[in-house]
Amino acid sequence: MNFKAQRILVVDDSQAILLVMQAILAELGVEQVTCCESAQNALSLIEQQPNNFDAIFTDLNMPEMDGMELIRQLGKRDFKGGVVIISEMDHRIIDLASNLARQNHALLLGNIAKPIQLVEVERLLKKLCTLSCPHTEEGQPISEAELLHALSNSEITPFYQPKVNRATQQIESIEVLARIVSEQHGFTILPARFIDLAEDLELINLVTFQLFEKATAEYEALKDELPHPCKLAFNLSPVQLEDINCPDKLAMLLQLNHLTPSDIILEITEQKPLSSANQLETLNRLRMRGFDISLDDFGTGFTNLNQLKSLPFTEIKIDRSIITHIDTDYFSQVITKSLVDLAIKQGFKVVAEGIERIEELQYLERYKHDLLMQGFLISRPKAKNELIRWIHSWLRMTNFNS
Image (cartoon, rainbow, N blue to C red):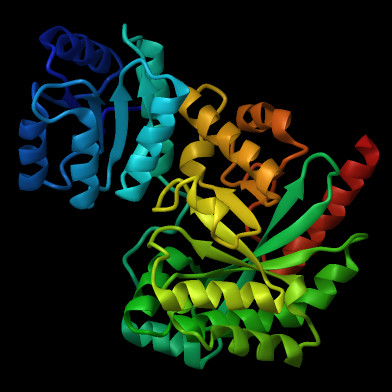
């Protein structure tokens, strides 16, 4: 893997550690390395050039401003790169560091123990490469006119990605993902190019309801292909939870398609905090109506493990940033084990999302009785007919192996 283009900032009050990191990064082919002996200087650099670094490697124990404070300040400044802690850490410190990063919306990639080893730095650079090159369509966000055209021409189209129970091999639920499919131009637009725009223009409900209507209409055909019950999972943003009439609107759409809330999981992204009275009231009302509620992208946003005990979630999805390279990443392993242990006690399900490597799947096999699996390694998002073909293939394979 080529690390030449990565831009790395190393922060440590030890000149010896800075020299070691420079030598290791040079050996790995990283050409753009900046070193700082204090967190204050590092923060000044980021304030001057906020998009100039892909990742920061920082010590924890430094004079004046320590690594914890630096991470908190990075979150406040909406730093988009990854953060790696250079320190020996026991599991309690890892938990505290991850909670701090999560509450301040910083992407904590993991940690490196001292003395620093090249293989550990390489592992985290690979993880950074994977996360900074997501499987999304190239291109700028679409225009307001293009989004309005897609909505008015009913081009919001459901694609489906299964969540699989590895212990039973059953497909327990299928996530519905939005695409814009233009028959006129013959291409598909992925959500990274239009969801933020839809939220900014307050059109996200129209996108969701068009997707909801189409997917629930196709649900019967999908259920007919499976020998066991299976739910549909839809994404809602925290912004949509501000509408206290949201549960009534969704229930009405279900009624039109002869479905019940017990058929549906609503996935709430963690990228914005859930704190307002309206959001919490809507969450409770959705649960009271019988919808399952999933916390999506856990590990990238604001919710910590303690909050999961009080919020009415029935499912937690561990973000791809934690699952990526979990087979060699002690930080990710501790977070996953803590979440699985809590899920067992509290009675909610856990989904490992973003599984792309066989090594990740093999590591997660130890939790197969307590985790659902989702990711490109199992199935990429597919249109209805492609998903049905995949279901047939999956059933043949699992029946053969059972």
